[in-house]
Length: 127
Image (cartoon, rainbow, N blue to C red; front, top):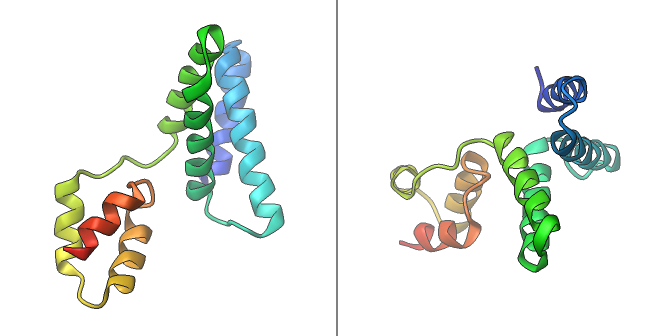
């Protein structure tokens, strides 16, 4: 089952359970994934969901009260659909095994660890 199919199945389940926050978050994620796919900008949903998660985090920084609580719930839902973020030690071991220049190491690492912080990854790849 693809990520989009999983999102749609979970949307149906959340609707039946009347889980409004999850329904809203899933609808937004599905819209982001489908829109990126139609525009031809992204075939893999993980980067789209990462960008969406980053937008939620940015909104959360300025939100207050009830809005902030809704955004925290939404952030938790979005993160549940992203791959587990590796530890820094796992990334270091991976980078140590890759030979080549900085660009090659970064490209391989970004492919292997799409959710890992890019700035941390770049500093680790320079080591």
